[in-house]
Each structure stands twice: as structure tokens, then as C-alpha cells.
Image (cartoon, rainbow, N blue to C red):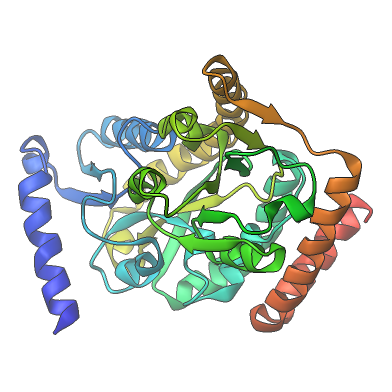
Length: 331
């Protein structure tokens, strides 16, 4: 009954939110997006939709629904696409590990140290991800990545003990595990709820990227951004396989060609967005703190312990990917 009600709500939302223009298209996909329309990932999705429409001469039109306006939450998205409630959706890998733990491989703490390493990890994980996603009746046509996440606080953070006692907003299971490991009270909540929670004193910190800090105007409630670089969250743009297979072969080929271009574009853009966002944070008085060697060693040790626990539920395939990753990097 709950699933039927959800499907009805999604259908109603599509009727209310969809523009009238795509009515003449042979195929219309409604795409769930997690972030506001002005976010750089949502803007990238708009470029993708525009290019698909142009390349297919309007045979396939993708209508965007930013800000989770279709009503789905992150952990629900894998099954929503599997069930066909969504033809296409932006799915953060770290938010769906409840259904498929292996997908959180690219969301493990302090495993990658920069965007190059994160992309290498994702490329190595792709075959395992593809096999896993097939069980959920979907495929990834391209991926995007966020700049690495740090911690916004009221007080400076210079060592692991400074994190103890923080009331910290996180966005995934990795954040919850990290908070527990360092003695912080971590709460997972949608970004839209963070600002009111800060004002009400329910939170005094958050872990997220420089870009999100700018989006939220973090300088209005917090003073420091410590670049612990816990992870660079990877998002999958996933398509329901039934919806995909209904497209003509020529259309699928054009979508895949555009998708390959988008993946390269979006991964390169993340670095530019990080640099420009850090500049904006500083201009508004936010003190951006780097992590010294001693603090980094403490964080790395936390990462080792958290990954050891995670691999027990992720299985041997995750360990094999990590072994190859470490071999390439010479670790």
C-alpha cells in the first residue's frame, strides 16, 4: 500500500511540476535530482538534458526535478529506480549502502586523498558496481563527484580530540560512523534542515564540501572550515533498464556518447568549483584551516579502523578492488 501511495504521489508531482513543452516528445524521462537548481551538479544535469534533446531531435526529453521535489530521499533512490518509479535519478553512492553495501566503496573515509585517486577508485569499482546495479534493474550512464568534504565548526579544529562533543550534521553512513569514532554526536539529515537546526542549537557543526558551504552561506552561523578531506562523494546517474531498453538503438548510442562527455566534464569541474568556493568562503570571513601531518596521521588511522569494519559487510569484491587500487598507487 505504501508503494502504491508513493507511486501516486510521484505521478501527481510529475503532472504538477513538469513543463508542457515535452508533450510532443516520443519519450519523456523525469529525473530526480537531490540538490537545488542552482547547484553545479544540477546545472550539469541541465546541460546533459539539453544535449540529449538536441542530439535526438526531441525524441528523448529529460525533465529535471531538482531539490528532491519528487519526494524521494537518498536511501530510497536505488529501489525507486529498480521499481520503475523513476526512469532516471541522481544517486549518491554513500547513501544506498543499506541496499547494496558495495556501492559505498567510493564513500569510504580517507581512502582517496585527491580527485585523481578518487576517480581511479571509481574506475576500478565500475565492473563491480555494474554487476550490482543490474540486480536492481538499472545502469549508470555517467557519474559526478563533489569536492572533498571537510568540517564546519564554531571553534578551530587542530587535532582529533577537538572533534569530541561536536553536534555534527552528516549526510551518509560514513559520516555517522566517523562521528561515533571521534566522539562527536553525528546526525544524518537533509541539507534543507541544517540551517534551522543550527539556529535552534541542535547542531554546532557539519561535514560537507566547500561548495555546499557556499550554498548554505555557512559563514552566517559557523566560523571555521577544516579541510580534513574525508571523501569526495560520487553520484551515479542511473537509468531504469526497462526504460533504457525501450529506447531505439540510435538514441541509446547518442545518450552514451553524451554521457561519456558529461562524466569527464563533471569530474574536471569539481576541482574548479572547490577552488572558487574556498575563495568565496574566505571572502566572507570563514577561516579555512589545513590539516597538519600529525592530525592527518590521526585521521588516517580512524579511516583504517572504519574501513576494516565496513569491509566485513561489503565482501571480498570490495577487498579485491581496494587491493588493486593500492597496488596501482604503490601503497
